Every structure is written in C-alpha cells, then in structure tokens.
Length: 496
Image 1 (cartoon, rainbow, N blue to C red):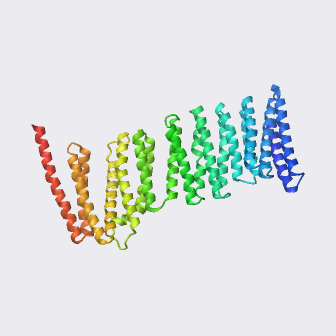
Image 2: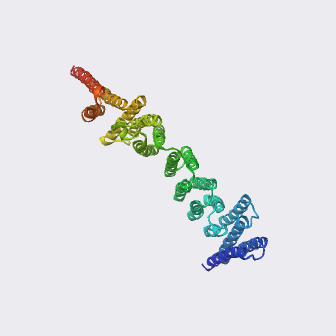
C-alpha cells in the first residue's frame, strides 16, 4: 500500500510540476519535456531492477506503473501544451509507451500493473489537455487500443472496465466543447474502437459480461452527441452507428454469443430509428418508420428470428403513433374539410396508410409463424382495427386528392363503407371451414353496419348517403344469399 500510494503521490507531483512550470515559466519547454522523460525512464529502470528479486516485486510494480504513466503524460504534455509533436505523432508515441507498459504487465502476469498504468494515465490526462477535448478522447482511446491485446490474453475484467469507460465518459463530457465535425468524428471513433474491442474479447471468452456491456455502451456517446449536432450531421452519425451495429449483427448472428448479438442488434435498431427521426419529419417520417418495421418483419421471417420481430413491433407502434399524430390524423377521417389540405400532405397520407396496412397484415402473420401469437383474440382485434384505419386512410386521402372538398370527403366515406362489406364477404367465403376468418368476417359486417348507422347516417348527405346505404346493402344482401347457399351445399355434401 505504501509503495502504490507513494507512486500515486509522485505521479500527481509530476503533473503539478508540469502545470506550474508552464504557469511560472520554470526552465524552458524542452528541458521540462526531457526532464519528465528522464524521470519516467529512471522509475521504469528501477522497477525492472527490483523485479529481479521476489522481495522487491511489490515495489517494482509501483515504480514501473509510475514511470510508464510519467512517460505517457509527458507525451501528452509535449503534444497538447508545447506542440513538439503533432497530434498523430503524439498518439503514435503514446501507443508505443502504453503498449510497452501493458506488455510488461502481461509478461509479469500482473493485473495490478496494467490497471495502475491505465488508471493513472486516464485520471491525470485531463489536467494536461486543459479539460475535455477531442485530443483527450484520442489519448484515452490509445489506452483502450493498447489494453485490448492484453485483455485477449488474460481474463482481467477490471482492466477492460478501466480502459473502456474513460473514453466513453470523455466523449460525453466533450459535447459542446468542440465543433460539430470534430465531435462527430471523435464519438464515432470511440464507438468503433469500443465495439471492436468488445467483439475481440467475446470471441476469446464467449461468457465475458464486460464485453457485452462495452458493446452496448460504446455507441451511446455517439448517439448522445446528436442532440447538439445539426440535424443532417446528427442523422449521419446515428446512421453510421446503425450501419455498423446492424452489419455486425448480420455477420455475427450465428458466430457471436446470442446475448451479445441481441444487444448489438438492439443498439443498431435504436440508432436506425434515431437517424430516421433526425433526418425526416411529418408524414414522411411516419412512412419511413413503418417501412423499417416492414423490413424488420421480413428479416424476422427469413431468418426465423424473434429479435427482428421485436424491433418490427417497436417500430410499428412508434410509426402508428406518428401516423395518428401527423400523417393520417383522425380529423382527416372524421371532419369535413373546411380548408383544403396540401397535395403533398395527402400523397404522404396515402403512402403512410398503405405501408401501415401492409405492416398490419405482415407483422401478425410472421408472429404467428414464429409461434409468438397464440389463440388469444386481443392481438387479432388490434390488428383488425389498425388494418381498417389504414384502409380508410388510403381511401379518404385518395378521394381528397381527386376532390379536396366536402364532395371528396363524402364520396370517400361511401367507398370505405362499401369496401368494408366487400372485405367481410371475402372473409366469410374463405372462412366456411376456418372459424377465425368466419368470425372476422362477421365482426367486419357488424363494423360496416355500425358505421352506416352511427357515422354515415349523420355525416353523409345526399347522393353520398344513398350510395353508401345502397352499395353496402346490396353487398350484404348478395353476401348473405351466397353464403347461405354455400353453407347449405356444404351441409348436403357432408350428410351425403
């Protein structure tokens, strides 16, 4: 304990000396850098010498860790304060020093040395970079890169945490302290490095929970930066994260552990939604979110995987809410138009409602084929309501495109009522031998009649009301006659 406390105090003294020398002009920049390098080298040399005897190995670890940290911080000072090294050169030299120190820890089989080096550098570096800057994030990422090979060789979870958490925290704290492009590049680099290290670790040790946490957490700072970036740039950052994570999920779905792949896929789906929300607005956003839900449902069917199905359901719920709020609001279906809606709004409504209808059919079908939906009627009732709303939205928006006045609204509702009765007829005919379809057909008949009496009778007038009642009545009459004949024929054939 005394040795490690002494090393920590020594390291803090070196940092304070470097800062004080700058503030008061002690010596010159070059002597300061050379003095720091000499002190770090001497401490490492003493540590190597003491490690030769078993009795001196505790002190050797503390001396070596202090010396390596002094050398690394000296490189940071030479890069950020004195500009003796360019950014790329300083990072390269820092990688050599950190890598050498961690390889020494690997050779001595000492997690304490590895963790001590990384922790000391990470804690003291912000002092020398004058706060949280993109350069600080880069130097912390160098520590993460240097620690990755050691973590592959040894199961040292605390080394993974010590090396992985600081760059993520620094990426968050640098938000607002750098320009947009530097912030975007830094956060994406931190995400890629963290995820890559997590993948390498989980391949070496499939049960490594630390790798799972780093894989899920590494992209989060990049996604948080989108709150302060311009919308196009923020959408690009979120889209890049989505591409990386979904590509990793697609490639490693069978080779990576199941929980790891699921976490990666979940982050990718969330990033895709965030990119969509930032890049688009209004009805277009609703249509794209629903289209992404359709794609995920198709992927779930092709891969026979429930993970994409869950993502499809989440996107479908959000897309449905966006549809109700922006693309096809209830007032479009219930209130007569007093002011014509823009043509673009109505076209977007037709597109959004069409995609919603496709999803309302595809999602429950895929869920049933994967054994997710049982015989409980509630999900099917919800599906039917969504499908009816989507169909009504398509018809009403299309009718208003033809005539953006009361005439188009009334004619559209007439078509909706008749179309419901036609759909009911189809379900009844197809459901002679299948109870679920038969029940759905009868429910739809009830819905059509209820719409006639509760809405059409009050909202429609003139020829629209007549067309709705005559059309629906003729279809129901035909359906009833035909259906009775089919049932009777089926009974005769069964009796014979």
